[in-house]
Length: 417
Image (cartoon, rainbow, N blue to C red; front, side):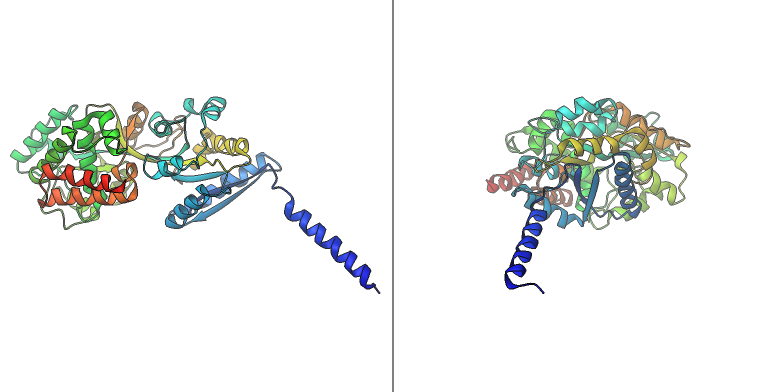
């Protein structure tokens, strides 16, 4: 039987042991990845397999994956940015808006030395890797997926309107729209009830009218929208397209209804992403009836957006985190992941078998473009995106004159500061 003093001594030893355990640092080979709980469950399963395979190839290493819903994930990252704790790797979107929020907050570690060490630029699609160079202070993040957006067109309707070649310049594109109009064929179909659908048209027109440098600066809010004539010109051009060259009425339908109208031959073109190939194929459409070409902005940049993985400044093991990302980006792993995370890979060495012509066209586009410009809702912070949507919708509806649109948007931006 233990005496009181012996019991106290034993309790003290236990307490010291517990305290020692709690004070033991996390193994240097342990890393944590914060990411989304993806709607596509195949992506969730594939990501977990990548982690377990990495652990098997690197004994003693453990990868913990923490998955959350979108809003919960964003909240967790904002909390991490303001504290001394956080993940080793985190998922976010690329761009000055969504991705840039956490870069600006100091949560993202510049990866220049890892890009050099692992030669990622030699392995990645230029269009997918381009987003890493958008931020000041070095390269941030590596691509998880990349989505390009371009013009899909109905070949029969182009032929009916006398359009013999895909437009290569904006002037040729306008001429094609005029030919379609003369033939009684609306050039575009959009779904106005989802803000981001018709936003795409405004984005590509801004790129065309303002050029790459000014477009980026306007979206970064470092230029005054009222002092750049190209901004007002873009709203005027947008109003022209929505009035003269778009299937009416469109503000009361969504993107799914717009898609149905496109496949029914009611309009000649849609401004959509590479995912539309699978959608067309899945709905039984004849893919040979359609073609694609990048919107001719004359800037030699591709319209699109990306999802990225970033190494956190809170990481105690950035070298291990970089090693995991290198494993994830490797040709073998990306080949195995093909079709699970995306229909195309961010690794340019991945091989594609039995590609449909439209899929091959997309791959050629991805390989051609080394510079990108992104969707407005990824370039702007959330509150500015909401105002951007409102102004665009009012112009498209005829409720706001193009001359007032830039003033309203700039007024909102100025009120934030």
